[in-house]
Image 1: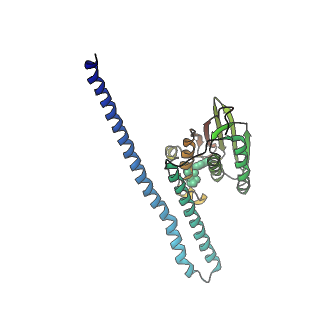
Image 2: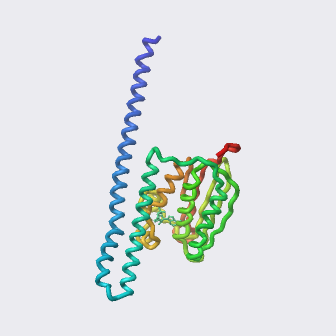
Image 3: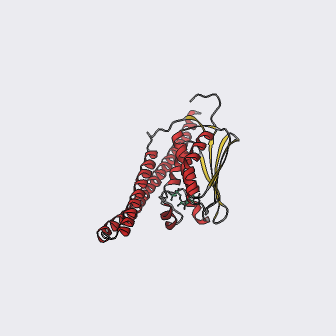
Length: 263
Ligand code: ADP
């Protein structure tokens, strides 16, 4: 029996092994391609603010005797340098998350309390944009890295404010349902066009360059958010968006922390 079964089993094992190797090499190839594209994007995106900084610096001499134009040029240099710094920080954060040794905490976190803190931190910005933040927060505990959760929520709330309309609203909610923590950010903003949705979570993707320039966006926020959510067994989806009236809704889900486990 051993003699007849053995070669067949070995053939199966070899077949599985070769499938495994093919799969791994495909994954590696895709990962290299993604990295190559990412580096290309980084270089391209860094060029825009740097070119502006050089152009405005060249104008400083010319505007020497005109305080108004001089002030404007300085302000533009400052703004573009700020954008550049934000991009560098986000790229570093993204690349740190790619490292295996990057450790996220798995502590018990109260989502209700975390969201309340994030909303209160963004209150000033909301007022500045003539927006109201409404909340419907229920108690729900997850096991996650608190700092990363704050980062995720701040980013989503910031977008809901940035891409809103004056007099608009942002509705933030959390609840426990079907073993999951369900967190929702709903805004009354300008929406995301249908054709942009597939690429929304890709690094450097912005719906339109003009929109990004006006709001100071880098197109890195949502890719960071997605990575941080998924590293903690969560999921993020664009639940609804209609260009114009209905605004945008993002839903984030995490598994609920088992009761009784200590942090
Ligand atoms: P950015 O730093 O440019 O805001 P993100 O990765 O956070 O980058 O978002 C990518 C793009 O998705 C943005 O450029 C913006 O056009 C669009 N977007 C994100 N959130 C919203 C929202 N709540 N409403 C409308 N558009 C949004």
